[in-house]
Image 1: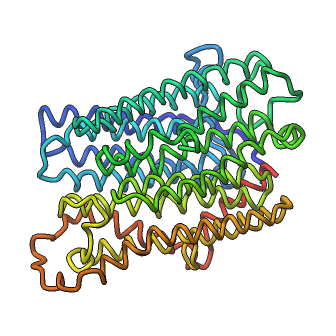
Image 2: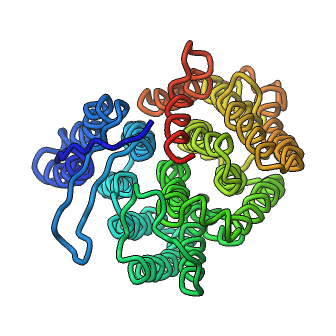
Image 3: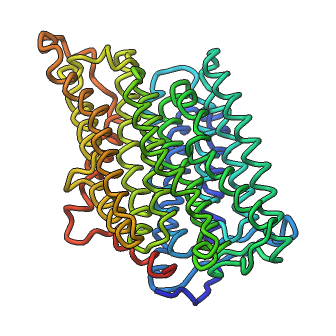
Length: 491
């Protein structure tokens, strides 16, 4: 579906501004009307979702929404809502609402949560800005804004571990930012343009163009936690508040993936990459991430660290589909962005519910917890089954298309890698659920009253568990249709 009709609108700017205004409103409410704070925070995350729904019909009909702000030369701030932007921003906006509601419940009657909401809304705004960027310069500005503001979220608990994890993430953010800046600068020097939607700006290879490609690869690889640039992630997820870890896994990691998608399809172009073969570097790193992340996850007893290493493996699936340069693999990558957000976001929220209500973080301490928190652990089990790729859950659809894409690329051996990775997924997730319900039967008679969970913590958990299979059971798989429409534009 070609997108040629331009509609100038301020709505993309308002989508990004809404969470920032919500953060400012929350600050004022905390000072003058504390009882209003939670409502303002939730509204600040909900307005972007409503605005995206408003422009959705225009974009799917073949238009794209455009706005240029003549600030920050040489290119200015450009917003462009095409099918890819619509798909990713819709995911970000939906999960922004989910995590905001969860955060309100997470910090219910707990001290120290006030400043967290300001940071949460600002990072959501940064993620939406990345998704709606119309050129690489605008992408760079929001990417850095989002990354810098996530540093205090990692260190929010102010423990020695949290401060160390925050400092590590800060250093990695600086490295990623410098490399991305040089990639953008070289691209502009060589082409005089940074716009998306042109089908590739690069026409001929040169040493500088290759340097820019690897600057992009390393910078976005750091954010996506791609092997061997992953080492900030396990410490950050173990130390950060659970809503921050969930936000990073479902949204921030995807900004790195989106950056690579823009680099592959809008900066370099498929024809150029097929000619030079640089995509094979990403292919090797993706397969390594899939297997290494899973093997490391097996060895973790801390639940958040296990989820972190699993996230490295799951992002490997997305990068694999991108690197194959085939339409079906690309559909698998796009669908996996959504599927992974539901699966891993739900798991992190379950981990947070367990920690807030029991204080337990170690998997070895969670025997029998399914009797104390049955809904939470059922939701966790649904996400675990989804992660393995068992039908009818979401990840079956993405892995099916990745396998199909591997055959299109003439690499059937990758199907074996996908199967092996799925077996590893089962080996580190299923024992958690088995022990939760069967590992300690004497816990059946534990008084459950002390484990009643705040509704604002459980509603997001239930919604994400339902979302793990809802699309595949519906008469029409709406996200899959969007992913196919996006692929038809690029291939």
